[in-house]
Image 1 (cartoon, rainbow, N blue to C red):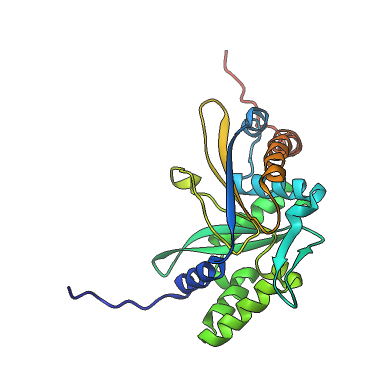
Image 2 (image 1 turned 60 degrees about the vertical axis):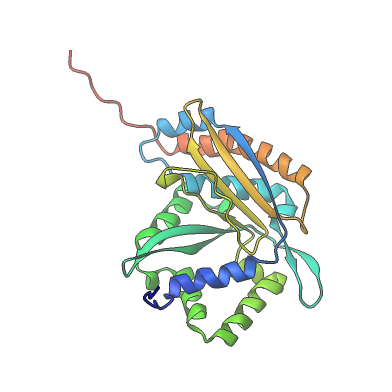
Length: 255
């Protein structure tokens, strides 16, 4: 069968590099359905509600503020060790279309727990629509992806294996979802150490969440507690911030 050779684009090359970097991470996953009734009520009453990615990014970062293990990465150099980052750094998977090709690029958000929810949401929305050259993280990752293969491997090795650089390049956790395209239970992989995915809101006001983590960093029992705490934060702190953003205007009814 005679086919057509196709050049690997820069965004697709990035995914190839990302998958190679993720191959040796011993991921374990845990899924749970969260009751988000209070969050949905607060979101329904807000004039311009934040997107789901922004809410999960800030909620997870708030949990990580009190759980140092969620800010801990596995580093190989100068010797194998665990490295605790001082703040959370989120890496959000952004779906875009570049030159007619669908692709995914990572947007970096540092210390989302300290940012207003509206600002976290704005960063994510801007990453979806702004030109690549206008988004600092996209420029940085594309520069590295343009390097020849040996230099690219070296840059990825430095970013992955020195604890201090992990936050700069890959963050302390990632958020990825296909809920905007119809949902489904997504089990994405990254170089780690934590990645959250969520589905569609169910009629009973619940949402299914999957968390995957590097088993070298922590175990299942702490992660089960993290999901419990995540549900609490979504329904309290995130819901409260949505309510504080301002209610929907009330329409006058003609009598």
